[in-house]
Length: 164
Image (cartoon, rainbow, N blue to C red):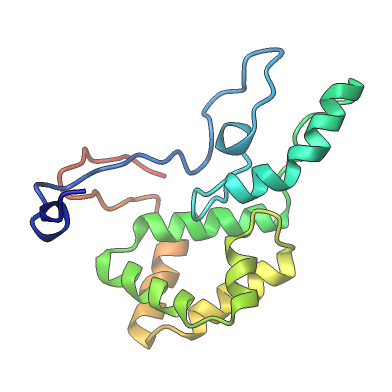
């Protein structure tokens, strides 16, 4: 790799990660896995760990003809959706405060936050730990971002979005 790429970036990369998964069901007869199967973490967008954890059981179910529909959303998914809503509405300073608070969490709470398979109590404990680790002004902004109207702040250079 040419070191100038790091030292002298040529521009800004904009990446679209479908945080909520596909906007439509997978085609009939298709087994959707990962983000396509709504297996991604709603806050981080990551789906690899969840997909790999399900791989053996999914392969057995397919081989045995016992494939079932995806699990319905649960209480942890409601928390993850609130976290995503807040993250999408925070400005740069608020996002950095949130990430700093995450970085100070104990490892177990970081895992609970990042894992798609976390139980509701562990996820809530991690989210509360992040909230408690933020400066007071950032906490206020996080509450506004979580509970506020469905307005998402546009990313510089990206098209404006409507209500979330």
